[in-house]
Image (cartoon, rainbow, N blue to C red):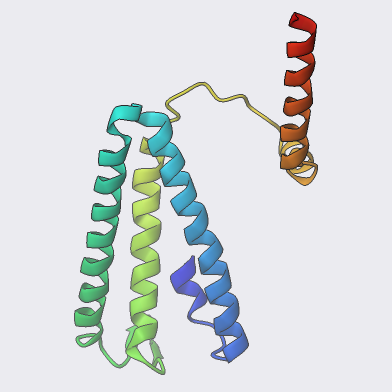
Length: 156
């Protein structure tokens, strides 16, 4: 939906909000793709597959950004659909619509082809929210340090 967000009100605060949203989305995408590589690839091949993924992603960003720059120069200044004519403020608006539609189609086609590669425990949304909200990473470390020292003392 990111390209469609650029069709909204052009204020600095709106643009800032879009950029923050997109930052979270891309961070989640990168986290998910890296996690998938760690799950799907053997440790010996992880560095190579991560390099392949970064190369392919960077190349596709370059190609699509260049294609967008070329396409925007050839877009019409108005669009007529069923007796309605739209005169966008900029041809970029048409480019954002095209980009959003292409991203939607590619997501519908490609996302169903991805499957989990290992067994995953199913969890309810409410349980997930509670688990995340009460997660305390330092307490687990502290607990493991104390439990390890108790095990060592009991084994002596």
